[in-house]
Length: 317
Image (cartoon, rainbow, N blue to C red; front, side, top):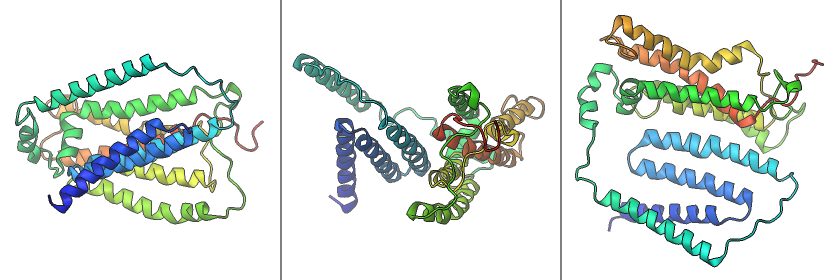
């Protein structure tokens, strides 16, 4: 057994242990911390599987943004009235649940072990036509060409999620501000890191987006990193969220899907059809779309985390 194989086995065991601990944790905050740790470990697993794009997304969304969202929810739930303890399931119910879990796990394992070797894949077809896109990163090529419609709809779903969050606002607070109020004087480690990290994070995010055409990275990873920098600043209360009725904010929300749709419709007139790119300029068009998608993602994710507006801006009645 090589050192890397031993490390892989240890990483797999650690992921399994953290997953079990997260499920078994009785404290809400402890379970959330376990979930964040589980996401970071999964990022390492994806790196070991040479899926760096997936690892970046898992670290930014699965552990980062979702972790902050769950931590915020856990902190808010701490101040609620204690709920009555639910009746604990009996031994028969626990045994039935355990048997069902074992059956499902066995079925999934059997499905994986009985797959054809090598399994069916479209990877050769994607690689063969990669040069037509002008991109060097096959993941970006697949997301922005062969499954571009799904990629566009994913951004639309994020906008619908923001609309759903805003719909929870009280009528008196509509058009107002969400999140904690900024403090006039900031001290402490969190404020220090909130001033130190964003400049570095912005540069790294731009780099990830720029190299995403040829190397692991892309719009979603870069946009998620920009969103994380914004959330750090708001969590430290150095700055607050903008009012939701700002026109520039709403334009930024829809900029990515809107540009995706406009260029997709242009495909009817200059290429083979919807979301088709003309020969020779596919790469510039894809990078143009991704620039707007980065803006939308960077704005959407923090708005989902901070929740609905709960007060009017200062100076408004």
